[in-house]
Length: 217
Image 1 (tube, helix red, strand yellow):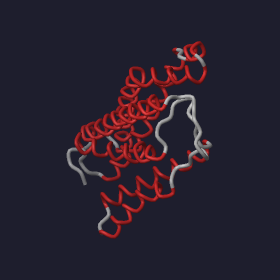
Image 2: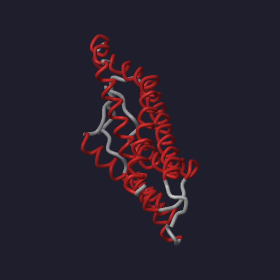
Image 3: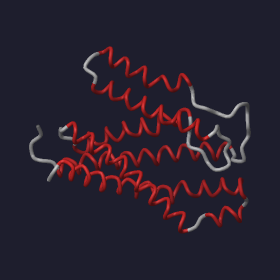
Image 4: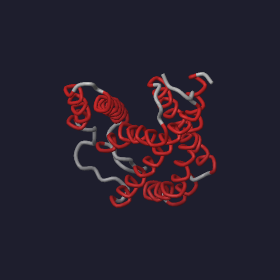
């Protein structure tokens, strides 16, 4: 089996599995809170009308495609490293992905429900992208840099986005969603994404090794 085929198969299977797990958690835990928030924002009738089968299917496809995308990136990195991975190391890679893509940005921009007041979307997107990039680079330096000075640079990169701070609305602006619901949604969303990344990383590690040659070079 060629390296490209192994990378593609690993990404497709692991990403699909992670997307299905995330969708199950969404339906069981997250969607009820979104509906509750939309009641505050739109009213009960409009909120209920929005929860259609098509919307659920769109969520499923988005989660699976997102999982496949991240899994393809991870399996490509594993291919370039050319070393055994396995379930345990795969979980560590998943934890790194969770820290970079979900946890670090959530420190400044926690998951938000409909009806919450936010800074302009473009500003939040730029800060999110820069935070993900800085966190990923910082973690890579901490894990693989050969010198202590480079590892120190990795710590600096982890901290820099939060020193500048995420964009937020000017002043104190109250949204339609109760604070308790917003806090619960953020906690459940972060926990669900932790499960997503655990499945993604663990499956990538296990499948990648199973499809790999017996010996690594």
